Image (tube, rainbow, N blue to C red; front, side, top):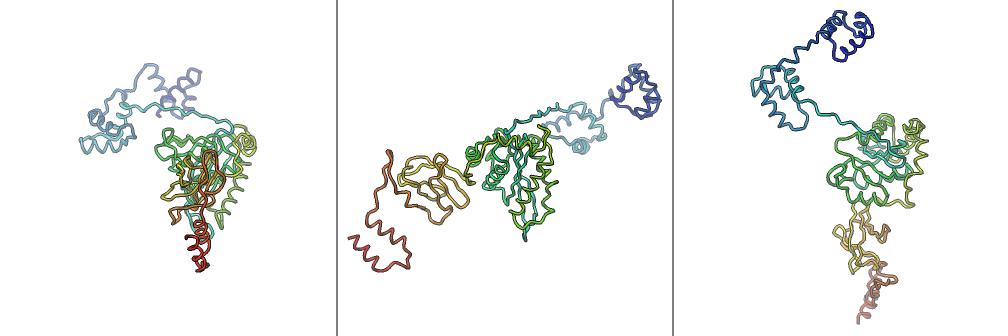
Length: 420
């Protein structure tokens, strides 16, 4: 005869009211004419499906099912596991279908939350995410690479920068590479909840990593972390990552180094921008990007060095600041002031008002690193310069400056004369 659901029954009633014959309606719905006559008669009589009045066999175990639901909480429920539990622990003899029907009637699905579609203004937002590419061949080695993908939300212009790691230095370095390729910095960076960005928590309640916060302040952008398990919140960059795997597909190329891979990627991304269309303007992504680029924050003339540690330290009266178990000198005029100390790749940089005032090698065996030039120069109204070195101090410096192999006995004799 054929089975008709509620939508088909509604369509049948409308078509019959419009004057369609029963045979024509049967052909349109893909059932027999007898099925149309049967459902037409039952609708005219106001008949109700008796199966809806039947009590499910699982209703006899309502208390046990409610207990199971309480244990599962608000998470997803495995009805098959519930059925097995009822059979094993409560001697239930009904079918899985009976349990499914009882669950659907007793515990209706929660309301569906609609998603708000927002088109961000030009220059307002960029979305950032990592893409993993294990087993890449570079020259004669096989390495696991990561690609930072940054997409401007308005024009959909993409930038991809490759890296061998995903640590804090690589995170900032790849940001700078993307900013250079996009021609500026968007006002907001929508990011995922990676540890190099959020040190604690996630989403709007997460705590931004101090080094990333300092980097964001220096590059003049706001950090906007996505909510947990909400990939659509940064759907533009998610789509860019998928397109990177499908269109770019670096596994099909042969690259001698990371620089060769990066150059090939930049060329492919430029071609892709001419092919794709911007939904906001209807033009190509490349043309839309030309409009958006003038609204991005300009990059500074000298880009900051990526850093993985940033702390504030008070300069002592001896012109030293403490950092990572060592002490480093700064110019004497900054004593008793707070300065920012950054750990760079192989360097320690001290800054005041975002300007570098001292640099030293990082991670040296020496626990005290001093630059004699930091104790020289004119004083200020607040700080007087240190006392100058005496004859003994100058001679000691001369000895220290000359190699051991060049120190003669006469030099030590002269030093003894000075000490008298």
